[in-house]
Length: 113
Length: 114
Image (cartoon, each protein chain N blue to C red):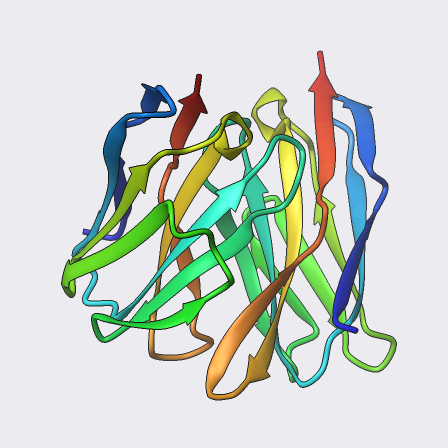
């Protein structure tokens, strides 16, 4: 298995809803990432997990809450989002051998109403 | 300041033609340079990854070059196909505090027309 999967593919939520994005990889990678990407812009790093521990938080608002239950899973819990949070949310995992290449998932398209 | 600049911003070519996309970077300390292809609304897919000592790397019809002295890279697409229509993103990895931080370019949007 050489891919990163993300669910759901699309999500529409109201500003008072609580929802979660899920990311899974079975490549044995021990570093996983969340990115946010607005239309026609490059991805922006949000969080980095290394060995199931949060190692980097790029000053992300607390309405985004990451969780890494085990080495294969990465969640992003969403609560009280704003319409400007609508974006493509990408998960990635990274090899630890060679040039440390990141593999991206297909993304979750989030719309906040 | 770590920066990656890509040109052109967008490009339209006819099917079967070749094209070259450019990437200039000011990133230190340099770790590696990657080219990704991203279809609209999808995650980026890696095309090539090159370290400091590599000058060229091919992946099918895609050939990337790297000049570490001038800090420039190019991605050459040969015999373009309609499915090549996508954004191509140059990403440079900088080693920082034991962590490889990715610096993304803004991308080149390529449209291949029949």
